[in-house]
Picture 1 (cartoon, rainbow, N blue to C red):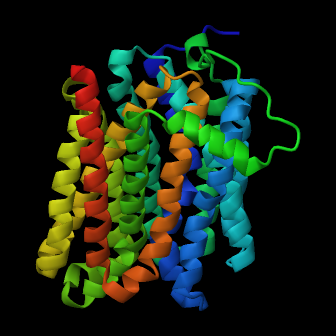
Picture 2 (picture 1 turned 120 degrees about the vertical axis):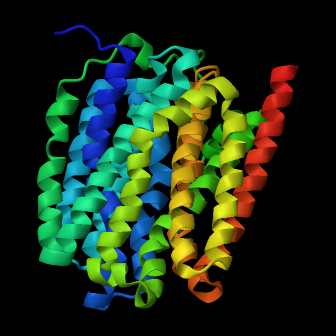
Length: 410
C-alpha cells in the first residue's frame, strides 16, 4: 500500500471524486423545472424533488458521521461514491415522479457521506490552512457542477432529458477508481476526545437528537455559525432553483436568451457560479484565513444583499448581472462558513458529531429553499423572496461575527 497522501493532494482527490458524483444533482436544478412543463409535472412537485434529497439528509447526516467514526474514511467514502453513482443512473431511467423521488432520496444519503469525507480531508491540514483547503475542496467540487450545467444545458436543448443523463452517468462512474485509490492519513480520521454514555434502553430517537443538538450548539458562536450556515444555504437554494424561471420570464425582451435557449443561458450563469469556486474560491479561503472567517462572511453577505436589491429594482438586463454577483458571493460564503465550521469542529469533544449537526441545519435550509421558491416565490415574486432570505442571512452572519470577534478579543 502506498503512503498516505499530503493534505492538499488528499483534498484535491476527495474533491475530484465528489465533483464527479455531484454531476447529476447539479444538472437537475437547471433542467428539471424546464422538463416538468413538457411532461405535465406541476412546479410544486418539482420543488418536492429538488428538496427531497435535503430532507433525507436531516436523518442521514448523523448516520454518516457515525459511519465515518466507526468504519473510517476509506470504506465509508468508497461506499458513498457507489451509492451516488446509482442515484444518477436512476435519474435517466424514467421521468416518473415516484422513481425520481426515490433517486433523490438515495442521493441525499450519498451526499451526507461524501460531504463528511470532504470535511475529514480538510482536517488533515494545519489549522492556519483551513480556509484555503476548504476553498480548494469546494472549488473542485463545483468544477464538477459547472461542467454538468454547461455540458448538460447544451445537451438538453439538443438531445433531451434521457440522453443527457446517460452521458452524465457515464462520466460519474469515474469517481469509483478515484475513491478506490485514496490513502487517508491518520490526521484525516478525526479524534473523539471522549466517548459519551450509551443511550438508555427505550430512549426515543428525538430525545437523543435533542441531546446532540444541545451539546453541539451550547456555545453561542457555534450556535450562530450553524444558524448562519442554514440561512446561507436557504438563500443559495432559492436562487439556484429559480434562476432558470427568472430568465424565462425576461426571455421575451432578451434576444440573446431566445437565441441560445433558456437552459443554455441558465447553464452559463450557474456554470460561472460553480467555476468561481475553483477560480476565486481558494482566494476567498485565503482571505478568510487572513481576515478571519467571520469578517469575510459579513463582507460577502452585505454585497450579496445589495445585488439582490438590484434584482428587484433594476431593469432586466442589469438584473442578470446582479444575479451573477449573487452567485459569486454565494461561492465565497460557502467556502468561508464551511472553513469556519471545520476549524471549530476540531476543537470540540466529538468533531464528527458537530459536523453532523452543522450539515443537518444547513441541509434544512437547502431543503426549504426550493419549496419556498416554487410556492411562496410565485406568489410574492422571486426577487422579493431573494430580499427576504438575504436579509435574514445578513442578520445571522453579523451576529456570528460579533460573537466570534468578542470571543477572540477575550
